[in-house]
Amino acid sequence: MRVVVVGAGEVGYNIADILSREGNDIIIIDKRDDRLKNVSDNLDVETIKGSGSSPENLRKARLEQSEMIVAVTDSDETNIVACLIASTQSKVPLKIARIRNPDLNSNAVLFDKQHLNIDLCINPEREAVSNAVNLMDLPGAAEVIDFAQGRIKLMGLYVDSTWPLIGKNLQEIKELYGKDLIIGSITRTNEQIIPSGKTIIMPKDYLFVFAETSAAKAVLQFFGKETESPRKVFIFGGGNIALMLAVALEAKGIDVKIIEKSQEQCDYLVSRLNKTIVLHGDGTSQELLREENIQDADFVFAVTDDEEANILGALLAKQLGAKKAISLINRIDYTHLVPVVGIDGVMNPRHATIGKILHFIRKGKIIAATPLSDEKAEAVEFVALETSDIVNQPLEKLKLPKGTIIGALFRDDTTIIPKGNTIIQPGDHVILVTLRSSIPQLEKILTVKLDYF
Image 1 (cartoon, helix red, strand yellow):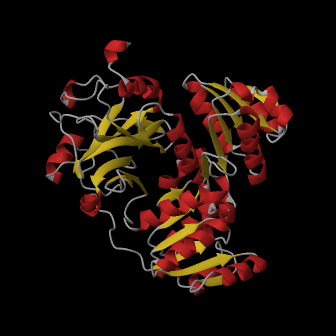
Image 2: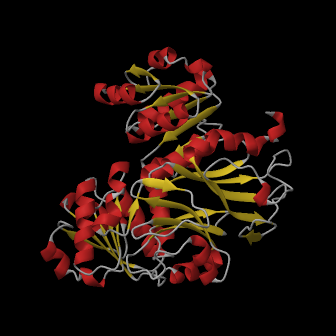
């Protein structure tokens, strides 16, 4: 597949990296020399310097020969124009644009086939807010990913050093739990592990655990995690994410306080919110946090534009008594700091963006594809095809790619946590975790029988 990527920032770089590693032909356009140099030094892709909304630059990128354009610059207007040119002049089959303006993004009619004809508009901040609200329903998890229309959850959990089951292997832990329990992935000191029954849990491991939604709280309790819904939330920063998050929390009847440095932005927030208390100040000020009783906070979200300040603010809130602190972090190299410094989790808009785009890239009947942790693995939901080699035989006999675990099935409105003798039937929704390096082989298995290759 030939793909034109407009924008070489965090999202554009990572999309180009993922797709090029999987054998796709990628060309990336950006105005900045430093970004293009970073791409050229590290990725096997073509580059063009200039605006991605320029018809001439898109012609140089051979847009008319491409199957997809992914426009993910920091400018909504550039992204929209690039897709518009792809639609009107080159007839590119798939057009994806990152649209950060919440007013634009909410107007779905504007982007449909009769108007701008953009196949997918992604608002990373809106996706991150949706994930955060979902997380508060299961506060003991560091992140929660929904599958099978919300019937199955994949929860990220940090292993506390006091957890009594440290040192036991997964088979022993499953027996102690007494019910079906599947751990799909473990991140340990920057290494992504797809575990077996003999894998031993270690302190500071980060686990991804599959659970039926109705059993998710029981799983959290087994791991010694919090399950009580929050009542009071602090938000550090007053940008679009803070506004969207506050609106969502107000609708759930949760008490919200926003701390924002800019008086002008404070005034804007007051005009848009109904019950939220907006404070003019700095979320890293110990004096202010103590005055506002930060120790009573069930959740703190640090969502300023400064990632270092978000980490510091979240850490300070935890030290002053807040139950749980979440930091907005886009840079992948900061993610590993979270368990070390004591923050409970991250909001990562880039993850949401990449996951949505991967949904368009993956072959077979892919319903969802979400990168995990440091993005060396993916959680994938797909519909089992009758022509696939994974149906009508026990899981224990399947020749799945290395580093692949099937975590759950959804069939006829019923969730199945599989065992070795479970048989996948055509039409089943299958949720699995696999190493990114195994994706090309997995796609072949999902599409037609292995005998064809």
